[in-house]
Amino acid sequence: MLAADLLVAQNIGFGIMALLMVIGALRVVTVNNVVHAALWLVVVLSGAAAQYLLLSAEFVAITQVLVYVGAVMVLFLFGTMLTRARIGAESDLNNKNWAIGVPVSLVLLGVLAWVLIDGFGDDRLPDPDEMGQVPVQVLSDDIFGPYLLPFWALSFVLLIAVIGAIVLARKD
Amino acid sequence: MLTVQFLLLAAVLFCIGVYGVIARKNAVMVLMSIELILNAVNLNLLAFSARLGSIDGNTFALYVIAVAAAEVGVGLAMVLLIYRNRRSIALDELSEMKG
Image 1 (cartoon, chains in turn red, blue):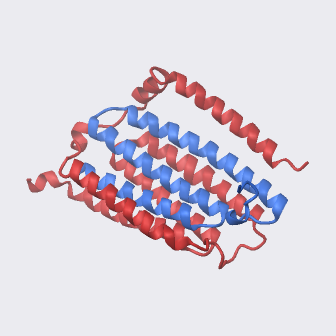
Image 2 (cartoon, rainbow over the protein chains, first blue to last red):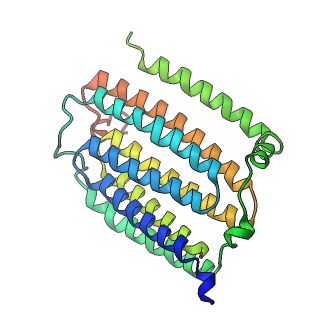
Image 3 (cartoon, each protein chain N blue to C red):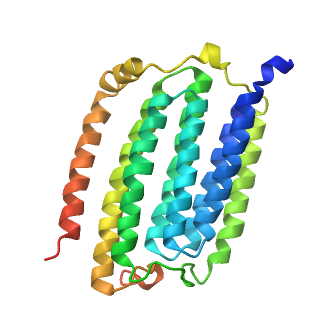
């Protein structure tokens, strides 16, 4: 493998982002404060948007920032504020038998890593120059062409979710 | 860049999310862990989209984001309702449907 093939800058960026995302994700599931967990989730979601940029999917990256970091996080913070009398640290966020989760997720990670390394060991992504950008026009042609029916279904899902959320959260 | 580095990152995030769903008692925290899992899936979809030079993975990722937004909206409304009725959102206290 030539040194020029290694894409040093992209790999360094990937490494930093991956490290931040893993640390953030671990904090989300271990920290004892719901608001802090939501803020660590912002780190993970922004890192995911950066990884999407590395995969030359700009439109999905921008949608990720708008929808997740913008809207979903505000929903989470509102949910926390409306269901919790106090915002500070709490001691009882974990189940009694939370320790079962550790071996389950470690075994799952082992199996997944084994399969992925076995199947895609030195499979390389195309170079960014060849990969090019994903033009939004092509993406919209894909959404409104072959995937039009799922798009309609998704519109109904969103409509029904909005109505359902209003009906569920009404006072009376 | 190797394909497997994105896939392994997604696998790590997925497993952390699974741990969160199993270990957490607070319903809002469980919803956050589900968001971690959905993001891992999106990362996989986009990695394969770039690998295969196909745009379908981008479309799927957008649909996953939209469904996740709807899921969070309905999920938090349900959490709010449970909190209003029971003054608690600890999931292990919701045992009425246990046989």
